[in-house]
Image (cartoon, rainbow, N blue to C red; front, side):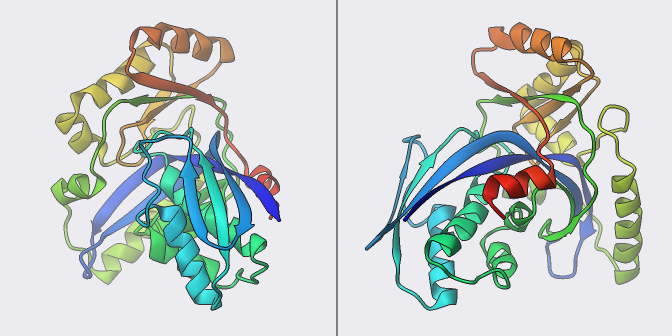
Length: 293
């Protein structure tokens, strides 16, 4: 048996760091959105579990989240089946676009189908164990992420228009960014109030006109000035809005016209180390259809 599935990237329409929880983690409220930029993962039944990748820079050892997902699924299902997995990589890694997390979630979905495991009830828990962003990719579309970003609340799709993602050739260590963030310790009352306000803001968000806020931008832009330059360049070339994706280094620009986006993309050709991706939002229904859910 063989199957091939898309593994979509994500952006963050907003990312608020609400404070530090009693367990040491930061309490987040973020609005996730899947976009059309995607990897592709091929699965085939095999005696052993193996992974190959089109990009030689991506490790295919046990540290890869695809293999971690496979091992967790096998352990949870009590099986020892194998699979030959190939990752056709297009999402920049690293880049703040959730490529590895998306790959892990799609591996859980694809392998449960390949191995004929009824795993629907356990996939959210397995996804959360692998990484904070992984659970979102079981849903797709537009969703609010709270907790560490791993508690997912799907919301109505947000109209977003034309978008251009720009990724400079910079690797930003997420853990270091959060370590530099000075956040006050939250009480339970603070936490509940902040989350309530954040959810209300998320449901009113309109990317072309709302202020897009990522609380990590100040730290990232100070430590990596080229990322700040990406955002400025997008705005200078006609983006009506732009915001850092996750902890970076990708920045997404929102344009009111396709022609303006095309002009901006062409103007940025002079930046030889910046990768550019013209994308559109992927709704929840489109996401589910693409993955056969």
